[in-house]
Length: 475
Image 1 (cartoon, rainbow, N blue to C red):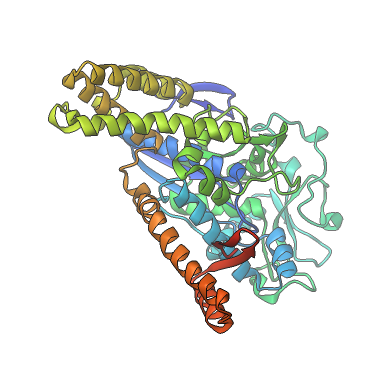
Image 2: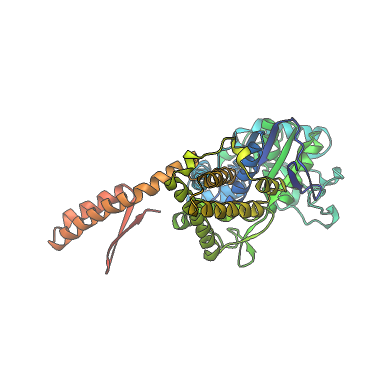
């Protein structure tokens, strides 16, 4: 069976047939870098990283573009609240997202464009839409430009919504709109906004609308037509609906498949910062480990919602322990290398694993094959069947590579090294804290404070408690 994918546009599972044989192009909506990432954000990155890995394992040359939205209403609001320039605020949280990606073993995209680096392409796209009669500049002198929703009869085809049943678009002041459902392509500069957050355009200084950014960047790097557009389910409307409408209205075929991953929920509600029910990625990684958190996010089917809880993360951690225990036993027995079967990584994958992954990235079925192979491998080790154990080991490593969970892969090397160093760091800090305690005991407070200040300069925070001094990383 060839790869089958659920296409949100047609609402059906259909064979993946790329534009160019042997190649696959993916555009994945990246983060709006307004604040720190939570697990709901990063699920998308993990799910589409698995898609990319499976396409590569299936022999495709993959071009993956993931954008950064670094100019947006929320960024301007959050940066003002934080008291720093919007561009510095955006860059700060862009770095936070990159740390989260690395912590979960997500491969870097082929290219990661920023919205602010593609203003000319956006202005050009707006001009095309105005020329074709699908967009208009507001007549109130605001400098706003809107997409005329009713000029595009297919609007609503992706989400299945009907225009007459839609609420007003809330992405701009409605005063200059012909129809309240029209959405902003360009937002005129307003009094009080930073001057640096605007660019010259034929309609007046301003900045791009969110939806326009992705259409322009996808076209820049993947052309008028490409294979897969991905993102979270919450982006299907209005973001992806608007992307599709403006791109098709400009004469571009745009994406041929639309894939959407489901939410991470807490107490049955979608995880979002507006609800306050978020889970910080690095905090989860610190507690459970990056590979366990990745397994938690990648294990369920990408179109199924995941409920976040300590129990579910703990279960993923226990599953990972089973995987690593088998790998360690096989290596210790010497069968991993001595009896290693020949073949490429793809050839070493069990047929049932391939079938599961080809069935719309069926990771639950793929994991069942993985753990079944681990059971077989453990039995082979118990019976000293070196050849069978080696076959199981090779298959497990190949499957872990597809899922992004192979502990020997380069993307986990830095974290493995950090894990190895953790006891050393603990020991060194404990020794310094002991010296500080001795200084305090002999009332040499200057020496004690000097040790505390020395630790602070390298990013450690010291807290004195009745049970003794505790240290932690500075926020």
